[in-house]
Structure formats: structure tokens, C-alpha cells
Length: 536
Image 1 (cartoon, rainbow, N blue to C red):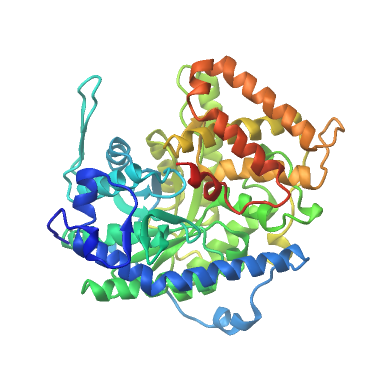
Image 2 (image 1 turned 60 degrees about the vertical axis):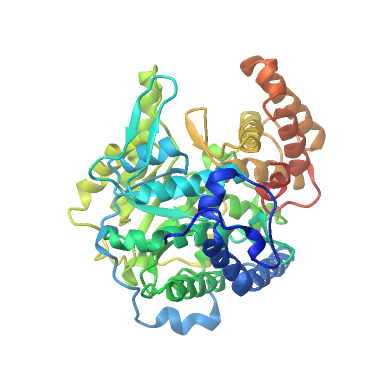
């Protein structure tokens, strides 16, 4: 959508931009684009708030002892035979998808990586500073038009797109997040609607003209009603810009345990626009801890022991495959968080073996593709899927042998809680939060790529252990004094590893204060990013 840059916000009554960001803002937030965003917020903002209130009511019931089950009121829908829309040609083969933030060089490298799909992430791997948001949207706009380039200021190396690139998908922020830099009628705009609306407004027509389309990943959904809201947003946006309905395609990340009980219903709500479901495994583990926060039977062992081989995760993964394939939708596997390790062949080989085992299991189970976080893993993941998937996908594998009950989805993994596990959670949570406060949302730590989801596991695990007076393997009770002592030890180690200057001026002091408040609070905060957002 072309628009003359420089139109001003004053032309829209009840609308205020709280920060100025020069040419990128003028280019992206002209009169027509702003009008589109404001219309989205006014039309759908109240429904979003109602759904967030419904989340709170549901959580109160769970805190009181309710356990989730498949919805009785939609049993006939689950029993009926129906399918989602067929995938467009450039989404028929998704065997390897790479993800990453919307930073300029990373976009180029990801699109050139050899993966089938690149998911550009405006959510968990991006810190939502105003500068990052606008730069990211501008980078995506340039990428769609194949005008994106980057020159390394140190060595002068030029990065530009190859002739053949991955299909582009975009992940907007979840329904819970706000965009406080754009106020509409005195309230911050929805971060979801802002990210979706700005990308769609500027790029939908251009994408269609290039033989592709506006494709999205939808994060953090907890119910089919939240999927219904997205579908209504899609219908309105397509009609508003005179784009045929069904042009938008969306893959939903099943990264909340409650959504696992509504996978059929979520696909049905989005059936005209659906391109499948994804196993968002790290957020799923986070949601499992958070949802059953008040039940000591759900206390989890060390994060490192909770892998996809555990029964509750394997059940969720196989149910997703069966549900998707019955409905003609792609069933996407989860993220391999490992990254290549330079300078240590033994450690690197061990990490790659873990990735290979994970991808081999996904391909054998019937997934249609998988995620990696680093270009160096694309070939490995592709090799495992090529070995069992000669065609573009495995939609023909209906997995009628899979029978999953609520108890399968709710089986708590067993294992020890160790002092090393406690320190790992504190270390990763603290370092990630410091980076996020500084504008970086994707951080390599200890040979893994950490984002908000893995930091959330670290935070909620420690809170849960304190809440239920869990015991370390050596018999000590995990309480606030023990955790505060361990947190001080973590800070001391960071001073030694990183240096006093970096710690003092790298947001670590604020990060420590916030993280300590979050893990020792009487009430578990829903998302650490909601708390930290007030400080960026």
C-alpha cells in the first residue's frame, strides 16, 4: 500500500503518538496507515479486553482446583468431518523453518539460510522498544520488496538477498501485550493489532503481486474464542484493503496447555485462513507451570530434564499431528534451541546429536516440518525430514492410532530439583532480562538460544518451588532466603565473568531487582514482559 510519508497524527481525533522516531515513523505511520491501525483498535480492542478478562476468570477456577478437559459444548464439531483451506503453493512444503528477530542482517541471513520458511518474530525474540518496532517493520517492508541490504560497518561486508529465499511469515505480539507508544482514545493500542496491522497495510498487496501472500504465526492463544477474534480481524482487514478473503494464512502456535484441549476448535475458527498448528514447546512448558501454579502436585523438576520425551509433551505433540492431519492442516514441530559451538568439537557434536534426535523423532511421528534457531542447523533438520518425507508434507499420515486423554496431557514429569538447576534458572533469567531491558530479545547463553519463553520457564519454576516449599536434591527447602542468597551468588559470578563495568551499565541491577520481585512475589505475574515493559 503506497502512501505519502509524513502525514501527521494530529489528523486523527483521539489518537496520540507518545514518542517520535524520525523518518521511519513518518514513512510507516502516515495518514492512511494510522487510520487503518486506529480502525482495528476501535473495532476489536474491546473484544480483546473481554477475552483477557475471560482468561483471568478461567485461571481463578483452575486455582480453585478445576482441571481442563475437552469442551463438551463442541463435541459435535470435533466429531464432524471438515477441513481447512488447502495450502498455497509456497506453504505446501515447510519441512524446515528458521525463526529470529526482525533485525536487518538477521532477516537477510534467515531468508538466505536454505530454510523453506522464515518466521520473522515481532514477539518473544524481539524487545518492543519503539526503535526496534519501527526498524523491524521497515526491514520487513524492504525484505518484501527485495530491497533489503546491510553493510557491516566494521569490515564493509555487504549482505543482500539470494535469488531464491525462504517464504516469509510474521509473528505479531500476543493478545496480552500493549503498544504504549500509540494511544487510541486514551488507551494503549493492542500490540497484536499494531504489529499485524502495520505489516498487512504496507505489504499485503505487494506480497500478492509477487506470488506469495500475507502469512502469519499467531502466539499465546488460550482458547478458540481468541482464534475467532483473529479470524474476524483477518476478514475485516482483507475487506478493508479489498483483498480476497482467505488470502491471509495463519499458523497457530499451541503454546498453552489450555489451547491443547481446543486444537480442533482453533482450526475450525480459522479454517478459511488456517495453515496449521505448531508445537510451541518452550512456552507450553511455561504455561504448564503457570496454569497449575497453586497445585503442589504440578511441581516440575529441573528445566533441563523436561524434554519432548516426557509423556505430557509427547502426548501433546502426537495429538497435534492427528488433529491437524485429519483437518488437512500442517502439523509443525518445535524449536531446537541449540546453536553451533565453535572451538569445541566434542561439545558441538553433542549439541548436534541432540538436535538430530529431536528432528528424527518429529519426522518419524508425522510432523510436516520443524523449527531451528540458527542457519547452521538447517541442513541437519532437512536431512532428517528428507529421510522420511519424500513429498512436500505428511498430511496423508492420519495417525488414527493416537488416542490422547486429559490425563495424558496433564501427567507431570518426575525428576530432581538440583542446586545447579536453581542457579541455571537464576542465571538465564537474569541475563535474559538484562538484555531485554537493553533492547535485545534473543540471547545466546550457554550454547542455547534463549528468548522470552525460556526465560519465563526459569522465572516460573523458581516461583513455583518457593510457593510449594519444594526441596532440593540435597534436602534443603527452597524458600525466599535461599533463593535470594543464590541470586546474590549469581550476580557475583556475573561480575567476575563479565566485569564490573558491564554489569553496572548493562541493566543488570534493574534486572536483578525485577527478577527478584517476580520470583518472590506472593502472586505469580502472568508475563515477565508485562512487568519489564514499563522500564523500556
